[in-house]
Amino acid sequence: MVRESREHVGIIGAGGWGSALSILLARNMKRVLLWSREREVVEEINTRRTNETFLPGVTFPPGVTSTIDLEYVAGSSTFLILAVPSQFLRSVAARLAPYVRPHHVILHASKGLEQSTTLRMSEVLAQELPHEVHGRIAVLSGPSHAEEVARDIPTAVVTASRSPEIARMAQELLMGPTFRVYTCHDVVGVELGGALKNIIALAAGLSDGLGFGDNTKAALMTRGLAEITRLGVRMGASPMTFAGLSGLGDLIVTCTSMHSRNRRAGIELGRGKPLSEVLSSSPMVIEGVPTTRAACRLADRYGVTMPIAKKLEAVLFEGYDPRQAVSDLMLRDPAHEPEFAVGEATSQG
Image (cartoon, rainbow, N blue to C red; front, side, top):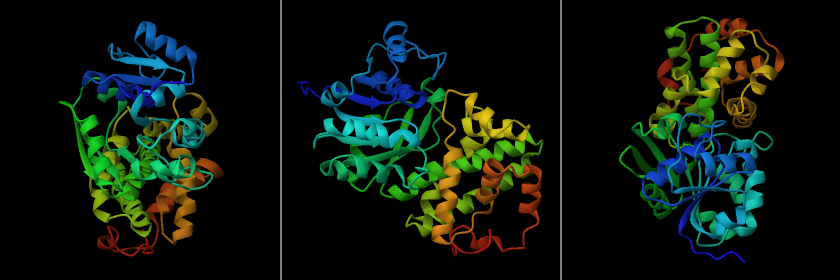
């Protein structure tokens, strides 16, 4: 039986983001257990203090210990941070569930929508984890490339929970000299902002790959934010959330940085690479691809116009020509912009 000393922070997922969070917390004088399903990743972190596959060029501090023992991580931690790709969150949560206890605080850092169900990540966790912790779930989101967080580059993010106490606990856990954390109650908005911006980042990368300019990208980002906000408001989010770190902030960094896997994938697609080749060329998950399908299903369900997402879906999954998609977007019926930020969800985008 595992002794529940609860001296560690447990991070589930040793990809780039989970690794960066473990480094951040260890530098903030926390002891961290970092779980990976891959034994070779565990051995590399514990022996060489590196994770060259998912976070190259960074050294782990002594406070980080990696393990494949999920029960040990749960039994030794009060905070459990799930940092796994969105399409794998359900299976990992199901594996974790037998070891979750009422004292645990669950913080997820996954940015996506489950493609098969269109559920947000906190909804997936509520289906898989014990009822006793449903009120102790929070989400972490915002403009936060793992490559920069791990190198102590100043970053600001937001944590949201239905419980103000849980949001504050997550804030206190993560705050440090180079990592500023705000709290928010709008779980729906924070999760949707973090998920849907990956769609627009793919489109922005596609624009870059096609050789278009700054004007095009600015238009995609601005109108993309309008689409995100329309869907979010219809699903119960506050429109102001999308003007914050998990909306506009994350959109800016993901659409403009070469750290962005979604933007890089879009560039390759714009240069003519097939989707299958783009997806297989990276060990990291391109979250925007499954999220595009899920978001378009949500748009249909809620009666929301999302022309950029719809055209991207056609490019990704139906072989639609990217240049024709841009032409289609430019030649849509004339529209009146001020309505789009928070206006009627069915208004033309």
